[in-house]
Image 1 (tube, rainbow, N blue to C red):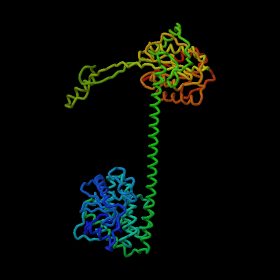
Image 2 (image 1 turned 180 degrees about the vertical axis):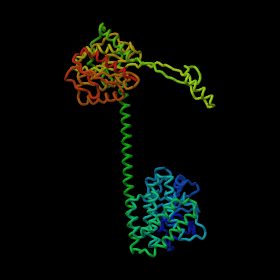
Image 3 (image 1 turned 90 degrees about the vertical axis):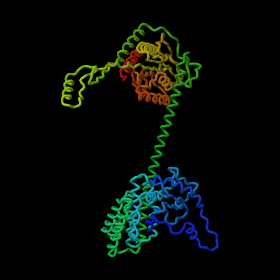
Image 4 (image 1 turned 45 degrees about the vertical axis):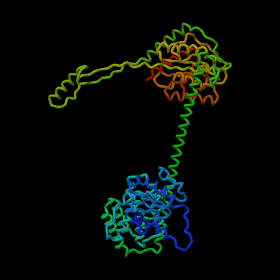
Length: 599
């Protein structure tokens, strides 16, 4: 086998002589490689830059060119401080397509990068040198054990390189099985060291290597395989500079083979059997890696799709907020005109019929609601008690005696006898009430009570807290502001009629949400929808989406209906009012509950 030749001594023939020796001098021009060697100089330099992070060494040179002096796909020369790399590993990529300096570029050539990681492991951990006069066979066995030892050591510091080391095992081990330099039992033992040794350091899985484990146990015997397993397991714990211990393990390896070999029959087709078993292992690892890669790609695609969906959702919400702001600006205009959903003035369809002075009953109702809101908004003062070893504060005699006892005992006094109570007033939450009233033809009975309720709520909110705001919008196909979100109470009641067609509750909710900040915490928030909800599917879907957003933000949503034929909007609290005149009282009660629940 040749896998254990990945750590090389320096070549005795100069590079130029080695290149010339490849060709017979028959008078013909030498064959030209598919890509000129000098084009690979940049690739080698960039590999050298990445080798610093992989090995932790800055004194190494990487040469990349077609073919290698050692004949192996790659090799590490400790005495020269050089890593030799065969450019053929990058096939079919050409040098101008390869940029190792860019982190992540290695994903396009995992096999080549896996071999490079393997050589980086050698350069970081194969730092022991053979002593003069060492037995060549023992040194060969030590280099064989070194293959899995350095990969295990590399995996400890860079566990994310496991995928590439698995790929390098397929690239390096299979050619060595097909062209062995060892024969018989030693060949089977070398295969066990290369495959099962990688299993024991965590590069390969036990299930993937079962074919090689079963064949080696059949050829070597259970006792010899157990002995060899103990040897390479012990070698995995050897320090990087400990040549003596590595050679001692290699000597035990050779002695175990010499002792058991005479009694073990060697199958005639052992090389074919080993090649077949290793092929099964490599196919299994390739299938596992492909499945992991597919799962990772699926997870990446799912995350990308989720991120894209979230970005689209954010963009949609931002667009909706901009549209809501434009709608609110156009609806709550000073002229009181009716506007279309796009903010342009509607040429017809204004439901407002005029204004009137509030009645004495409405003024009394507004005063009662104002008192109820102030009572609901009241918050008890909070108390914060602190202790200290010195005044000010109220003296606690028990703590004072404890402090004197601690001082008399010679210890550091920790008792704090003075207690100070600080009382703070809790802020009174303001109120935000938005009323959306349907003015299609089926809602004519709600016009008078809702006009009265809008004035009562607006008047009570203004009397309760200067930061409280209310607004009322009449909607059919168009939008009309009956009351606006100002801090001044309206002087007159705005009357209106219901003779419109179609519905536009979604835009009405958007305008109220933006104008009153119904989605922002810190206030008692209530949205009242007065409608029979006899909408089309698209109109219902748009309204339900807005209602869900408001309820998620903590805003209470109340739907008032007047007839038994009314439909319920999902997400709202439904309140059926057989008597339309009870609408002001119902809205007042809901507003009081909303401000009471505010924290």
